[in-house]
Image (cartoon, rainbow, N blue to C red; front, top):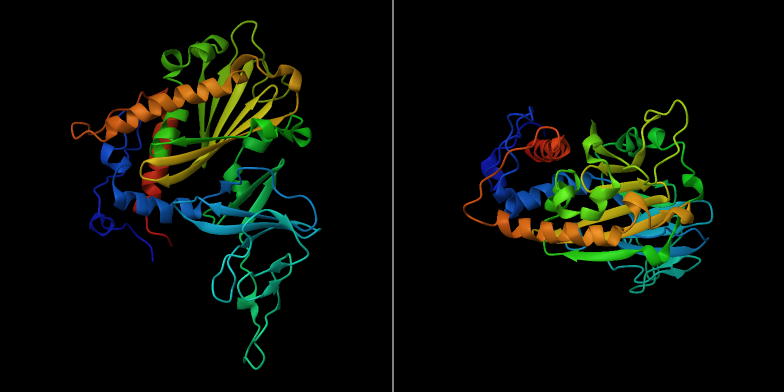
Length: 373
């Protein structure tokens, strides 16, 4: 089925965001609190998106790691399994009666259902099932564990239930822009893994991330590290890039001749990939905000750090990231309270500074109002 869905079918009132940012109004307040819109976003955006695994994917033969994709939202039980040849992303639900298969990370030679003893190989193929002698047409491919679309990128694992676009297309220009960096030697810093719980809608967290307009008012330390007069935003099909240039004396990338940004003192690349993945690249390495929508006013953010130059940690735009995160959460919580107000309808976009917010809102609303094909 294709075509525009009647708003009455969705249970909320929402209009497309005007294409011209100079004339457009922001996402209305009720979009952040309407259950019908939340359900539509869950099925038409989040279920078709790529999501990052909030940790280090298994690398050893026989390693099994369960993963609930967007706990409280999609609630999809997944299983990352390494069969010695490759990483697999499988359903963590037994094909017999729906029992969960693996409850905790472990090492195993096979996947065994704790309920009735059905066994699967590490690549998800059905192996055996007690008590099924005489069953006709059994086993079949339906008895294998469903495999999900997944990808590995520089030590990060990504998966999607039904990807709207291929992984490489989703990444867009990011790999080429970062090709000069030694990402292949970046190591996930386990002490740097943090988990934050927000009593706020995930879209507000993304809205805040996608603009630098608030930096001098909310992040005084970050504002000193960046030359905000040279802050720049680039939009691409499935995301946006904010480029922060360093103030005098602050660390910046040593860009090679021929690079798109050669001659500029870039302190940070802030990449956002639709709908809720954030990759922040600094001279010392990369931090990742894995944003997990949990409900209308509940979001979990997993914070990961991949380090390739420890000597530059704690300096410049990528210095005190924990403090910056807490400052961001303070304003996001304040906006969460504000958009619940009956008096708030919507605002306007600052045409340059909030171009990426406008881009996000257009992508989001267009995805919801267009029925899946």
